[in-house]
Image (cartoon, rainbow, N blue to C red; front, side, top):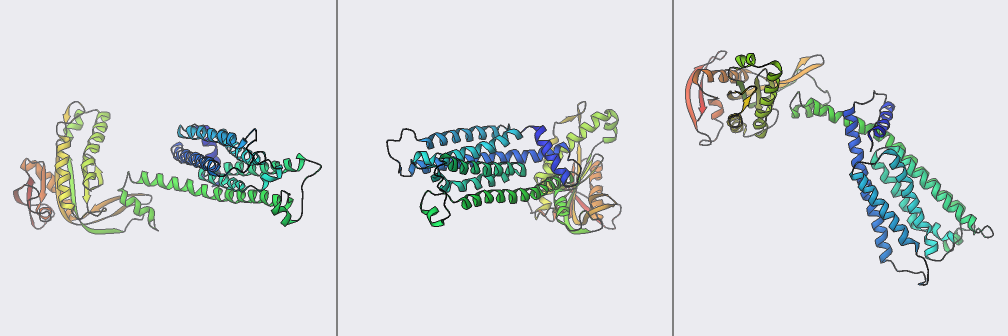
Length: 444
């Protein structure tokens, strides 16, 4: 589908909702969904013509064997070839709007051509084909256009079907002006090749009514599709600023992003900081510093996510991550230690900027914290608070005093199965802000 045609159709839909035109990235998302739908539509059409062919091959032939020309196989062959071409173009994403309109007309024309050929195949008057149950496939062709979520193509298919069937009826009536075979007797209509005008009128009206109902339903469904794309995009954007689990809760909640409501739970906090970052930032140009930090955050975010942690904050060069909040994790203490160990592994030998290594210090602690959205007005952020968060930051800083890279509190070790890691006790220290000493360990 060409971008120009797709965007024009989408923009009109957006205007009907009373909203401004969507940005290009959201238009691209909707266009991608529609292109996927065309692949599905083309596949269904190919299945339909395959069913037609199979039924024709398996069904007994009641016509005489001396028929010079059997049109049904030819029509089926053309229909099958066109369906293959359409599927190929759909897979290549090369179906512009004009091709979709043409496809709607050609699909109906080929199906009606198949129905029309029945009277030749079976050596009957043209009125014979008006009673073919294959007419019901017209409604299927109209219905599958709804998968595109654009009423224009449903209407194009439905109008083509109604006009096409009207022409089929007209051909029957005009093929032999001396004997139009018109009857008003329903029994005679059902038991002969006679034509009941009211019955054919009902068929055309039914086609138009089904088309109208589907078109109206799609007009409303299209608004829901656009709103769904907007909400999905907003959720993805929101998850870049708050944890994905929090973003999902915000989307599903009645209040939305409301501040002042916190969740208290036990979790393991992991705090990281780059050793000597102040001097490093002086040695790097601003552009290099931002590039180096982004690369660094990408590297250490991997192990945190891998072991079930959620990054709550980026504070300069520091990272605050939590395990078991807001994402539940029964093994949060062990996973935090695994993440810390893997962070050191992924940074081993890596250089940033002009060959500068980022030596990272990690503090790990476990305890009850409160987590939630904080802020004012339209600006909110997710964070965790409590004395255990502050203690974790203090533990990270103690690495400078003990020449270590990872310090773990006793409360975390007490929740880890014995023998799972090899810890070495460092000291029992008094931490500013706490009225009790804390026993600390490092990972060998």
